[in-house]
Image 1 (tube, helix red, strand yellow):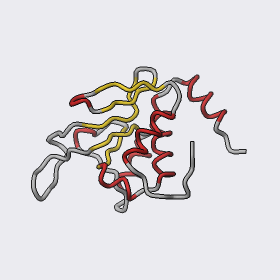
Image 2: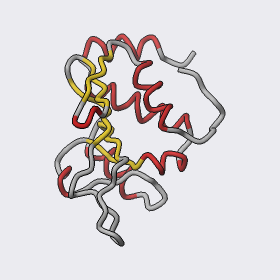
Image 3: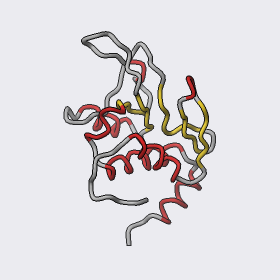
Image 4: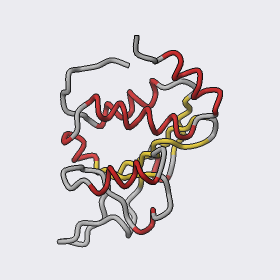
Length: 141
């Protein structure tokens, strides 16, 4: 994965990073929003507007939500309980190992942070063999 010294993340980076992981297939989800899968399991997807994610002032449903799988409930809580984090969850996702982020807030994290989120999402959904192979190939020297 390319590193960029902390520049702000962009929506295009989500696509690039997800496609850069091995054995990835892209499916068209609801409203033709992309779903990135490994071994038939989604790890990142662009969610259509739903009643559980909305602007509290206007009631307008968010139309730019991206969902990322996470390795554990602890990881999820760390991401959504940090008030400075753009990641959030809704009651619909209680018990689900994923976090949400609005595309318009991606710039609040760096490209490198986004790369780690995408990699962790892929690792949490890939088969054990694929995880081991990827981790062996990406160990720091």
